[in-house]
Length: 221
Image (cartoon, rainbow, N blue to C red; front, side, top):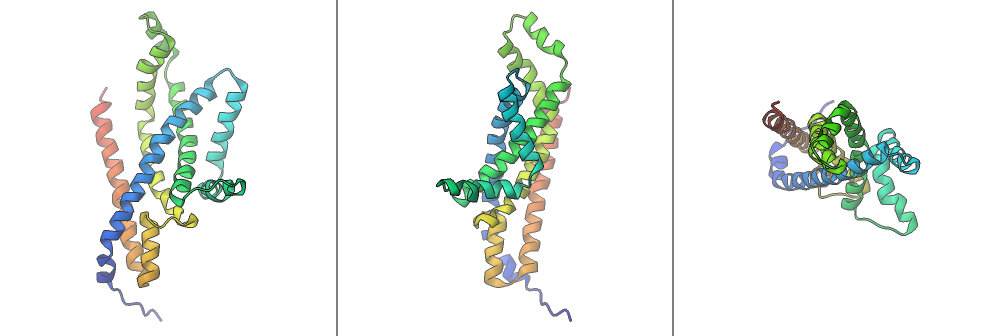
């Protein structure tokens, strides 16, 4: 027989700690996206280069990132490298795992965006006296970012949700980790995780709506 008494007041009293955890969740997600974008740009250029070794390295990274569980990638960053005497904190391991995953997906988004830009765009830049680097920087990259902006938003949402995997490597300062600790302390499982779900939902909706607003302002034409 169902005999569970809801006590929302106990869970709501812990809301400040959960919001502190949400801040850490956003820190991990934002950092993983910023670093991931840098690596994704590098991987994209490597994938499009004429060098077979560079292509192979980029392709291997992307294949592993896209075709293995994100949890496994976080495990490898925390437990795998520990076999070689390299030890990372749970925060760093989570950040490395999510960044690795983000870079793989974003690299494919960027490559697809570059393929969608006509070659005439680069040639037009060269005809104006730009170098290949200048043409890529001022003409190609802005268009690439415009095309891949909304897919990047989806990856940001995914990064926020992936932070919940940090609890598997001992991360207890993010939203999910804090919720897990509070649950062990109060046994208010439903209430605490329901509140955590709402916070996750609000964060992801703010990201999605904010991205749409930014896109409508920056990419009108």
